Image (cartoon, rainbow, N blue to C red; front, side, top):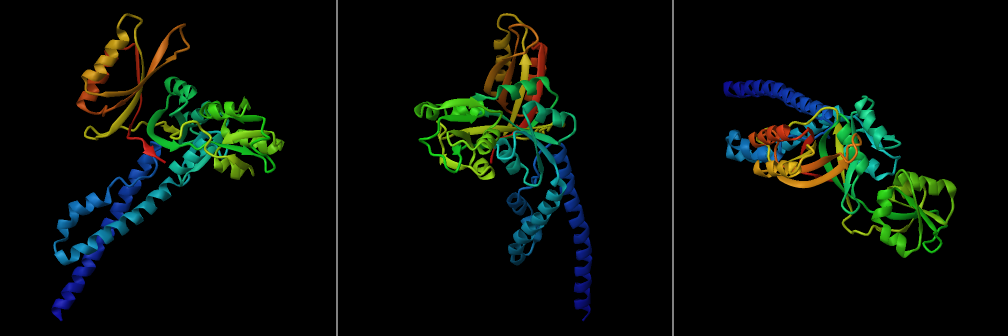
Length: 364
């Protein structure tokens, strides 16, 4: 009888300890989520369940009880995820376009708990975050077929926001028409210049007149409003459903692997830990107008052990024939090598700006 009472007392004591630890665990998860929200990073469980199981399973002790621990931990992390998503609920995410645009679709997938807010163009979406109207902006920076989005590159160079994450989305361009339209009857197609570029071969093959729109969803809305079966839009299947259009032809983009990279812009930078692997970074810089200046800058990056993934130039719009360089690289800027590279580039370059650090691109 005494042994039973002792066992019950021990269970109650452990339950009290577990209740306190449960509260501490969820509060810690919410603090992580608040920091992620401030940086514009979607809610993510920072602890990998399997690695936690492997690390802590020996602490369970009794071999017979070890089979219960993975179930316990996964349930705990499920509850933790619910607490985290509540913190992220209501985060305001700016994008350029209207509902049904590819940027809107990307923003909704990245922030399923957030409130996506449309703006008429890239600049307006970017400034909404700078001015505090929104917490972050999801903007396209590059398409695998049409290349970089120059307007967003310029905003990144001249603006104050930081890139904290990059996502990759496969883009399936469709020819969208009114309910009574046919492919043969279409004479004009309208869409965003990037979409028109991605589908240039299809447009030429069908002898269509192309006209530009601010974004793909606005083009779809125009087709729906005008009701002209000779006018079609290039856009997403979601836009077709949203505006009551018919998909006349699917996947008309020239490249079968048509992918757009979207960057998350926030007011607060994400700083990678010195020991983090698999890091990426984006920076802009200008060099002095002297022989070999750009070559020296590129050499420093290689000498410090960093891989340069992309290098592009854009006019600074301040002096004639003056350019800034946009660079994407692999490596951790918080490491000793990263700090040394930035120090040396700072001495060489007339202007140097780190736009952001993030982990490998995430497919959505």
